[in-house]
Length: 405
Image 1 (cartoon, one colour):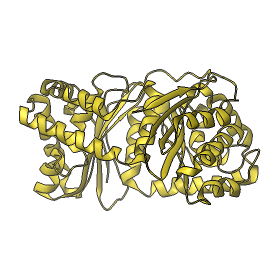
Image 2 (cartoon, rainbow, N blue to C red; image 1 turned 180 degrees about the vertical axis):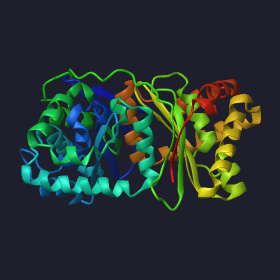
Image 3 (cartoon, rainbow, N blue to C red; image 1 turned 120 degrees about the vertical axis):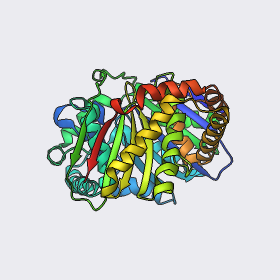
Image 4 (spheres, rainbow, N blue to C red; image 1 turned 90 degrees about the vertical axis):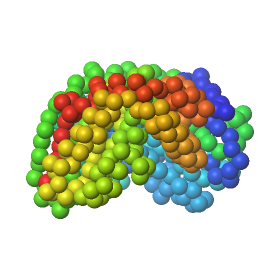
């Protein structure tokens, strides 16, 4: 189903062919905000913005028009451990996309006038973000739980740092970290694989193999806390969470299934039924699981009425304790697996989602599991596996609490 190739310089390619008129392509780089040092905090995200501002061959307008001008979409994002530059276009324009990716990744010049304008854009992004407590609380939670470690850093950085980024600093960070051994080209679309390899060799193959000398900081330690911060919000925002399996932990699949049971996107998640549907004092209640290369986080977020805080926390503890103390019945386990497998299949129907998923998987594991293989792994999870990991990671005494009021 998936086809792979590695260029002589170490850049890897993962591809799946389909019959769509639209092809999704991207370059994944194994560099994110946790790789920043000192005053660099925020620079990985700023580079993600700035690579569209000029190269040795193009000005900003020509970069933006190269894909958008033929009806495509060019975009990028930064996480704590990855950066991705990607595009969606008609399949006939795949070569155009790959050529532009290579130009952006290897020839960005960061023109000073453009960089100064982009500083204002990012500063406004930071302000906008701070006006959204339902988003901000996730990063504040990570700052407290990973205090003293780069994973605690906000991806956007600080206004002070952003104002002081320089052309030389951006170029230096990119040169140090955008190395061939950290890159994956991911494509899902209607193309011949031999042509895909040929195009990647043409546009990416001439760059020298330059392994990264960067090493990520020590494995983070988790800090336990219980904090309430007065932000004068109309709604009380509550975050409860803690340690979870990292990307390479064999319990990751069991915990992913557990997270889906607790507060996944379906309306029949345990928290949605027990809190929103039964009591009605909460608009949003959901859980998320974020695995990193050497750590993992589990979060339960809720926006609730201020006077319902104690009742909400008690209901939450009851639901988590049930999962930690009592194994699912065979029917509950079967239905939970059935739901999770169906959700994954629907998500994979989006070729854009698939392109991003396989790019990240190949970057992380040097392989991509098919849906059948993922289903096999889910089916192998037992009720005892779920109970045991819930008992270790979801009991109240190991969970931290952050409240905006």
